Length: 209
Image 1: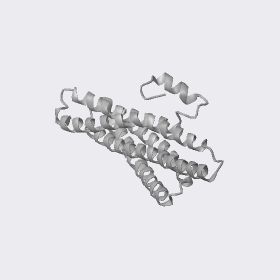
Image 2: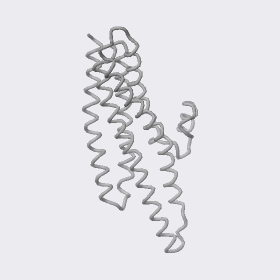
Image 3: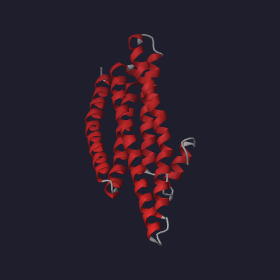
Image 4: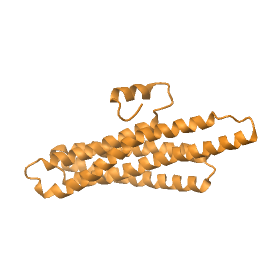
């Protein structure tokens, strides 16, 4: 599986018994969908007569959302590679002391990468939530519900990515890196819960104007 495959192919592989793709790749896809929806709001707004006052902001938001969409799509494959590398490390031989030391180092490197990738995903999703707030504030009212769908997707993606940080961090021997990673994901999860709900509420309010 790679990010260039079809949605149907991805879902078939996601539903299979294969270890990858899994939740991390799904989180990246969800985040990319959130970014795409924010871009959609910008593109529709830019094409509407009477929305000229929002053009500069929509162009700025779209530039950032498209960068994040590209980054998150790359993370689909990065997450697969990280997990596959970790699984390969667990399968390394451990017959002698050298083998055991090499295997242990490879496992720790794999765990670190398997923590870094979802943490990067969560950071990107937090940025999408912030962009959705801007798109909601000035976007064309006719597509404001799409900004709401985008923020919900980004928030779900962030929480999904957080679970991969939580499951990998405890096995890290680098306890300081593990502590920092968990503290950061805790902060991102907490702030995104508040921020995404604020955007959702704003979308509902504008939808009823």
